[in-house]
Image 1 (cartoon, rainbow, N blue to C red):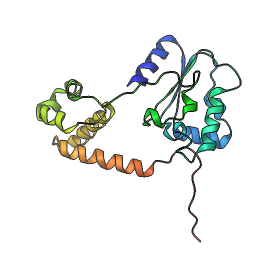
Image 2 (cartoon, rainbow, N blue to C red):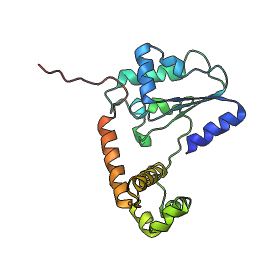
Image 3 (cartoon, rainbow, N blue to C red):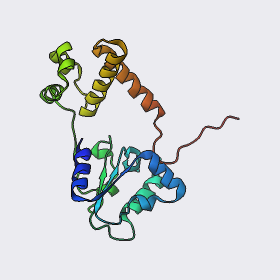
Image 4 (cartoon, rainbow, N blue to C red):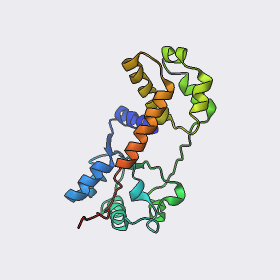
Length: 201
């Protein structure tokens, strides 16, 4: 949500913006074009989404070479005046490599914690009246402890899709589907960097 707001501000000012995902980073590594991800013709913002493995402490990670490539590209050979890099990660601050936290690399760290009960209640109050009419607000707030704003939006979308398919506002079913989707996504996620491959003999 914060990154979306920054993108809107870039559009309003006519600034350039770019989103770099783990997939596009992998492709740039294969093509030898990592430096291009950090370059812009003019002022703007580059968003690096889910850069967990690239940012992790090299003493705790096997992807040392990949992190070195990332740091070299971040520093670059030319000054990057007017370009801001925004990294999103699920890493705790202490898990991020010290090299990234030096001045001129990552200068500001913002920690977005899970919304408390009151904040979740305020978000749920913005949902469509038909959804709120058929669900108990207190139950929704109590059952979403520890969920992020993005999690709640995803659950809402699942809830609506289940209603379209079945004609019933099935909150437990939406939560169950959300959990299953996250489990599947975690199993499929490929970390950034070089990984050992198993070989069948």
